[in-house]
Image 1: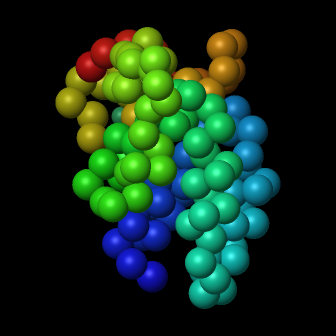
Image 2: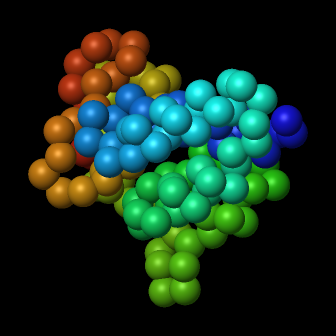
Image 3: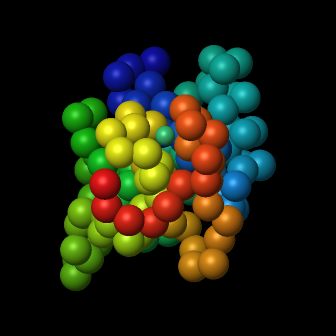
Length: 123
Ligand SMILES: [Zn+2]
């Protein structure tokens, strides 16, 4: 497994904390296959590039690996994920990873460190 595979698997695990993640089952299956030694990077990329916010979020998570091109914003897309389109911990300076807003009206994810619901605003 190379650096890219590891970066994508790490991001997929973070995304599993999102209660409204519609691919919970698919990602769980792929992570299990990865743990069994299979390379599931291509499948994870196909799955996670479908939603615009998730795509941008993935791009940020793996920006320092060579796989980031798979998540490059589409033409006409702004690129960076807007502050209102991500979930962050309400505690200032919290180091917990942000999560993407997958769809409007979804339940907020919980901060893994403070165990409080995350909020949609810039840090
Ligand atoms: Zn926190």
